[in-house]
Image (cartoon, rainbow, N blue to C red; front, side, top):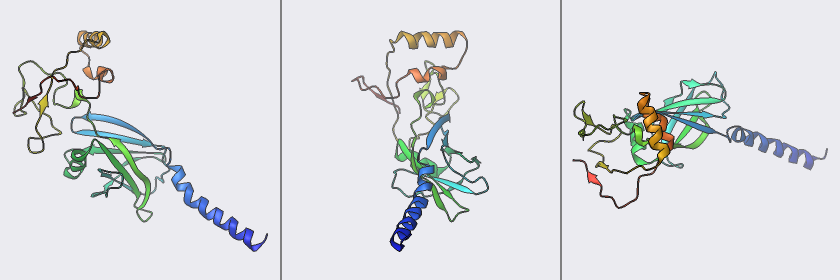
Length: 211
């Protein structure tokens, strides 16, 4: 083998070694579980992790943003990592407040803080049925959050935003029948969450400010 060919092969192998770590985590998939109006977790799969290593994760409001605080990954396998978002943590909440789509980065503490998961998009939007402390709003209850019969939005506060509510009439018989079925069986209305729109109505119905 000539010297030129040897150098070309060496360069190709070096380039391949640089690309492999990125390829191994290229097909990262994210599964979200909303646990409450102030907590959710994200399970990332398709990873290549060493279970003998220690890993940390951090959130940022943009893909190019800096992670302000790192947290230890405590739930992982060789191919998955599950990370929680807790709005009781002020640093996590500051990212949550800034955007509907946040980003998570995971680094290998054991291997010189090497980034093993580049900033990956996460859906921070809380489904409508889980926004408040009630999944079903009882007539007569008020949006205040100071008592057991008052409705609050735990992920928000009067200090950070004004709350509004809006009625929307549902005419879809599939949704209506599903609700009747759930009610007759004393089931959970969360079972019909996938049937509801995830976007706020854009009609000109008047929004009433909660004071």
